[in-house]
Length: 167
Image 1 (cartoon, rainbow, N blue to C red):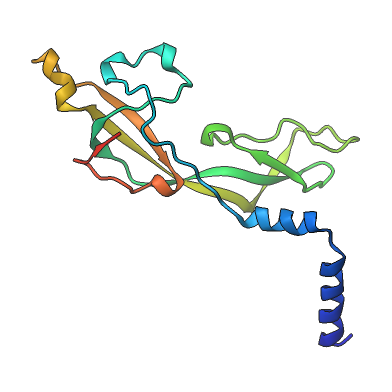
Image 2: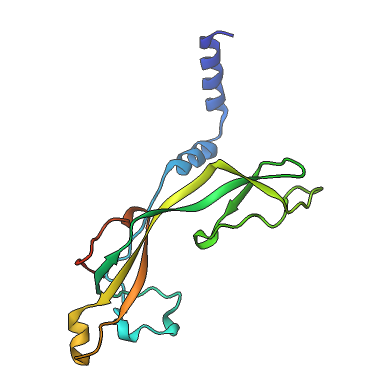
């Protein structure tokens, strides 16, 4: 086959694909990130309680410490050591490394897997320590200001430095 024949065959395949598959391929390359601004309620560090777990809030504070950025594994592919199946994609919850619990093929229920390193996908992560803003700690003069650990992901990494006031 000549290069012209390969190009013609490729163009014919693209024309035969449904608009849905072209849209799907386009969406696979898009990365949209949404940001919420001026989220209510704005909570002081003294009022952060367990009732606010898994709720979206705004906290204002001074960045006291910014740890270096690091890579966090998001997903990776594994191969089964028993049957050799390589289509096992595993998502790492909270950045914690774990292996799949069982093989996904119908006849194999192995629990031994091998990580395929070149398929691992990573994201940037950075930890910050925030200290409550001075205007919040005035009412409790003499008390050590409260601090809280927060984590920045992806494009927010390296967006602030110690000394910055953030919310």
